[in-house]
Every structure is written in structure tokens, then in C-alpha cells.
Amino acid sequence: MFARAMTSPSHPILVHLIPTRRCNLACTYCNEFDAVSPPVPLETLKARIDKLAELGAAIITLSGGEPLLHPQLEEIIAHIRRRGAIAGLITNGYLLGPRRIERLNRAGLDYLQISIDTLEPDEVSKKSLRVLDQRLRWLAELAEFSVSVNTVLGSTFTSPEDALVIARRARQLGLASTVGFLHDHNGQALGSTARIREVYLEILRLGAPLFSFTHSDRFQRNIAAGRPNRWHCRAGGRYLYVCEDGLVHWCSQQRGRPGIPLERYTRQDLEIQAAIPKSCAPYCTVSCVHQVAMLDAVREEPRRTLDEMLRSRREIDPAFNPPRVFQALEWMFLSGAARRAFHQLARLVFGLPRR
Picture (cartoon, one colour):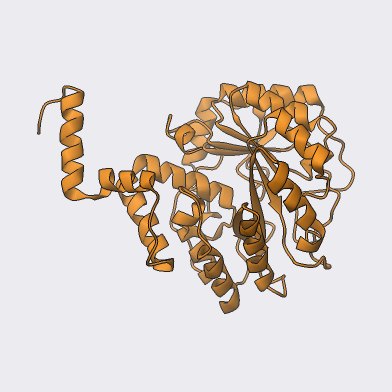
């Protein structure tokens, strides 16, 4: 994902593509599902994937609804891979089993995010660890793709500690974990509490791999503290949300903007929509758009961004020792003497004049 993001400043880094709006659950905080919509026909989805590949999409993630309800899901994933994009899947996990995981392996799935909100199912969310723990064990044992367990913190959930238990269980099984924040139907942050902020920081202290969003968590920290984020959202350009009707939207919470049919979407549209200031940006909780912004920041301002990532991590864990690759990047971009030596070497290698 990181390398693909560096190739140009205008192609879509991440696309969420909806193969079906229908879901087998009805979590009360979710506004992205219904109980009746038919699956999008396979050939229609293939044509949409072809168009996204023409636009240069690096990552295409199937979301919903519940994408596992689509009867030809594995064929969709295989087509994403044939077109050279990274294939992702976001699921509630209820329909996962050993055979389905093997089918996803064969299809070439690159990563899967499974959503778990509570320890026990309740009136808000049925995505509980008690119900889904066996699926996590199957994934840990059988999946040939990356797996991340995502949970949601917010005032609707009576026990924010559940998120910490879920994150620890994910790490115990060797899986990654992420956390988001509850939002309203416009993607805007809802209320936070001191305990929610504490739980969030405890989850961060569990650690994360190189270039995880956890290393550049200013978006999430500000949301937890009720503060706005100062940033330019490039949704509609670097991030696209393509609904079941084939329309391009800024994100799942801003449907109708711009609402242009994908088949008519152009490279000029990517640039225009990415440049538009979004009034929803300061209190936005849509973390996939934040992640795209982080990657753009590394591409455009590597020195400042790497410094921010390291400072953020060390605020949580003063003993944090970055991986060797990260240390090399820190040496190249952050160390004054080393940076000068590296630049002198680069000038010699590429035959550039000395300054």
C-alpha cells in the first residue's frame, strides 16, 4: 500500500466498492446497509473494477452491506487481482468458516478486516467476541492474507473496556487490531469521555507494525479529545467510495457528493474532487480517508511526517525502538549529518552537481 501510494500524486490510492448493500445484521449505529437489496451482477462489478484499474486504483476493498453475501465474491476478488490492484474485504465475519477462508485464499485476497464491537451481543451491535472468537481462531490458523480486527469506541457502547479486550485477543492470536470512533450519519464524531480516551491510549500501547496508522494517530487522538483536525481531505480523488448503483462519492457518509457515475469519472474529476475543501473534514471519523492522507503526507513531506510518527509513538512508549527499515528512513530524512552524507552520495551516483 505504501509503495503503490508513492507512484503519483493523483491516482486513487484506496477505493471502497460495494458488491451488495444487504447485510445479515442490523447494528443500530450503522447507516450502510439494508435487508433487501440484491447483489450487484458480476459482470457489472467486473466492468467497475476495469474502470477503476484504468484510473490507476492501487487498492480496491469490498465493503457493504456484508460482502460475503455476494454469491460470486471470490470471482470479484480474483478479478481485482487480475487487474493489478490489492484486494481487500471488510466483513462482520458471521459467514466465515474454514472452507470460506480457503476459498478466499485461492481467490488471492490480500487483506481482511473483521469488525467486532463488544464482548457480548447487545441491542446496539451483534458483532461480539463471544460469537466471533472461533472465526478469529480459524483466520489465525488458515488465512494466507493479512487480518485486522477493528472495533469501535463511542458513547453508545456502555463498556469501552470491551475494545481493549478485543484488541488484546487479536494480538494474542497474531492478528492486527485497529480502533475507530462512533460517528453520526454525516461521519462526524460523537461525544467522547475520559475513559474512552484512556482505553484508546491503552490500545495504542499494544504496539503496531511499521507504517501502521497507529504511528501517525493525530487524527484519532484529536477525535478522542474532541478537537478538530486541520487537514485537507482528498476524497473523490485519492479515496473513492463506489456504491451499489455505480456512483462515486467522497465517502460512505457523504453519499451524493459528487454522485458521478463511475463510467463517466475521469482523471480530471479525480483532481477536481480532491482539491475541493470539505466542510466535514475537521470532525471526520472516516479513518480510511485519514490513512490516505497519511500516505500522501509521507510522499510529500517525508521528513516532517516521519518525525511526527516517531514523536507520537514515543509519547506513548518512551522505550519504542523503530524497526530497521524505519531507522533507515529516519537516518535519511531526519538526521542532519547523515542526511547531508546521503544527499552527497546520491549526487555522486546520479552525476548531479554539488551544491
